[in-house]
Image: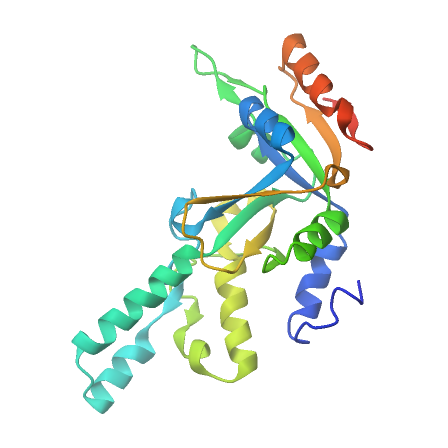
Amino acid sequence: MNQRNKHIDPFWIPLLKQTYQIPIFYKYLSFANAKLMLEKHNIQFTRGDGLNDHRDLDICKCDLSIIDALSIRFNIPQSIIAPKLQAQAKWIKSIGVCSLGQTGDNPKLWDDYASTKNWMGKKRENGICIGLDQNLLIDCLIKQKHLISAFVVNYVKDVEKTIPWELSFGSQKEIWEFLYRVYATKDIKWQDENEIRIVYADALTEVYKRIIIDKSCFKYVIFGKSISKKQKFEIEELISTYPNIQKIYR
């Protein structure tokens, strides 16, 4: 871990260390998407404008009152301010996120991401949860020179206007604080997900970015309670080439 932190600003170290205490990151998926992930042995980052929560990576999280105050004080027309804000909003939306769970038994994540409704509207837990070794995964991505960091998500009562915009042009520490809060703050309505996320800080040109990772990063395949025997067989056949993966049946 010390080697990983060698070139990181001290501001980030305690935040990143939170994730070091979570040895396995869990990805909840439908059967089809889990099968694809195992076939390709990759992980997917989703650009901000492709996330379920439209207020997640969005400029609405920022309190822009300082902009109005400066505009009035220095008589700066909106025709100058608006394009700059639009550029910042576009950048925030371009950040990529890989959303993961901290445990493999989160009922909210099973229900929302690894279950489907039958014709009667009843949920069937027919997806899969894949456990990834945190240390091996992060090191694998860093070795490929991807600009990533992992954070435990913080939940606030109402995410809109919670981040003072003046942090974005303050001291270096204030800029780091601004970025961290953009990356890792979500509305409290999502708190049951207990999310940990890997952030891809370089702007993504496509909605999805998929990165191949070493098969040794995969530690668990957890089968949903309603998965079929045929589906189990397909996954078991796929993971037969994985060196240290374990199967868990819920």
